[in-house]
Length: 89
Image (cartoon, rainbow, N blue to C red; front, side):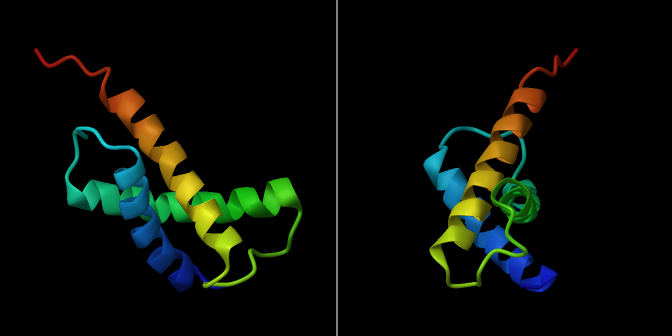
């Protein structure tokens, strides 16, 4: 599966991750979309590293979507943790 497919999956996975992890985020929709794209790529990479597969199966395969959503949720949680610690003077 190519990078363009992971970007498309990442956009949708970011929206799903946001729905699964409701709450106020410091960023807007653009930040959420970027986190989703990066999370989709992270999920694909983790799938390769952890499960030892050459590539996640395909665009419509459930394992692809789970990997992308989990990657997006990981990055969303990290973003919330980092951005929540800022102190505005």
